[in-house]
Amino acid sequence: MAQNYQYYVEGETEEKIIQVLKTDLQIIIPGKVKKFNVVEELFSPSHLTPLKRGTVAILVFDTDTDDSSIVQRNIKFLNGKSAIKSVFCIPQVKNLEEELIRCCNIRKIKELLSSKADRDFKKDVCNCNGLMSSLLKHEFDINKFWSGVRTKSWTFLRY
Image (cartoon, rainbow, N blue to C red; front, side, top):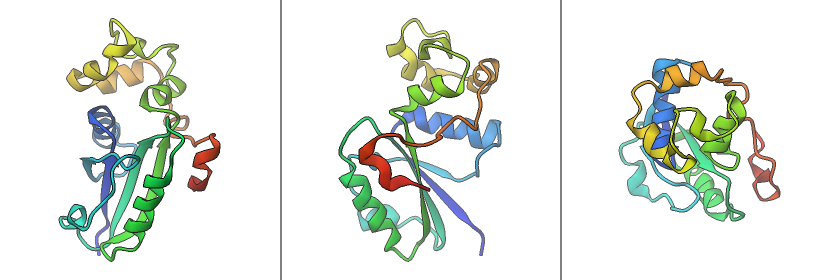
């Protein structure tokens, strides 16, 4: 049976980064990407209807909240469904911007895409056609990206 991968990401910026990592840079496993905030929203059976049996669910989420109860419920829900083979969690410390600062040679997130201000970064990512080039230009290091959570409320995510 072929392996299917489903990424669940918080927003458009994460969706764009996942696309670049799996397609342009080819450094993560290809799969479908769906916007779904697993820290704030609960899965329902209808969310799993389009999934093929044996799907690996990959949850990408921010940890800039102290409440991990919803994501824990989502993990338990997914693990109990026959369509899901396994669940992997990719917590972002604290958010995507901080992850990118840590794994690129930049001090502020606005440097990555030459944004006018940090607050423009998300809009600039969504409109960027050269994200891969910008990541490479700033020495993107996949080994530092998504390297783990260091906050007490997220310690259940050891993997």
